[in-house]
Amino acid sequence: MAGYNDVSNLRVPDSGFTVNTGRSRGVASGKVAPVQLLVVVAALLIYGLVVVWSAVQGNPDFSFKKQLFGVALGIVAMMVFQFFDYRRLAGMVPLLLIINAVLILSPHLPYIGVEAKGARSWINVGMQIQPGEFAKITVILLDAAVISRYEGRLDSLKEYVKCLCIIAVPFVLIMTQPDLGTGTVYLIIGIFCLVMGGARWRYLIGTLLVGVSLIAAVLIIDQVSFASTGSYLILDDYQHGRINTFLDPTADSSGDSYNFNQALIAIGSGGLFGKGLGNATQSSLGFLPEAPTDFIFCVLAEQFGFVGALVLIVLYVLLVVNAIKISKASGDMFGTLIVMGILGMWLFHIFENIGMDIGLMPITGIPLPFMSYGSSFMLVNLSLVGLICSVYTHR
Image (cartoon, rainbow, N blue to C red; front, side, top):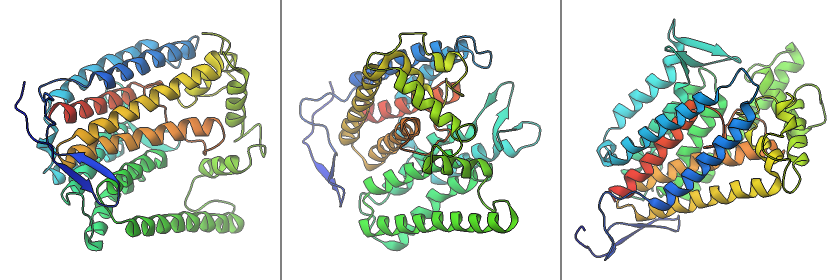
């Protein structure tokens, strides 16, 4: 048992968020893992493996053994991160920036860079991996390291703009591929860190208004360009197709709207209790594209119905609650922002993936945490669980 200290509290301005800066009396601070969090993660992993197994049956493009390998490798990475003292990275902003740049730009290297689906996001080093996924870890660490320096009081507009510029670096780099989905995840991580790091609300609202204005400007410029030249100037055709599908899902049922319509059919056909494991006809008969990855929630809902989907939502709520508890127990702002950055990433992935399946969000290639097929994504998520455990272990 470690010694006991009195409890002191640091209140993050304008956020309503309280961070414990000392150990509460009677609480041990030894190398103990957050058991409740790990139980929830284990339940998500088992649930995800069951659904992925059913989704990849008879599909030669996917291998369940690779998914198992990704889980095994992720568990090892989680254990390594848990016992690594995250606080050593707090002052390494330049190094984290360099690592981010190397990871994100590596697909542009000759001989190893791979282009797929209009984006140069992959490298081939004996197997294909997506470095932008691994950069999510360093983006979280970078944003947390930069913003934690202000100790919860980011009052200066000059310093706020400086933080924005650093946060924008990974986004600008990822757009050279281009990968708008992953870039959006980077921005969401930064926003969560800014909010929890004590940035003034008027700065955040101003940033939001500027962002909305830029998006509107891009869409207007592209529409003008398409009307005059027949081609878009900024966004790709498939990106505009996804936007049009989101605005009018019935516009082109055999083209851009096909995936969305098939997703709704799969979810609706599951009913209350589903068709049973292995009976997801929409995916097994090939009607639902990218079923093991982007539309894994549809496979789950078709097999286990509304009840099965509700079980997944409950597990995600428990994941979020346990992560928030650990962030509040952290003894420093850096640890708090790491956990909140991870939480921001998970929440965006969950809302975007499930939202696009039910028509509340545009269709993107954003996978579902601990559920979607993909060794790289699984490795990243379990590594992030290890980081949260590190914050808990070293609190």
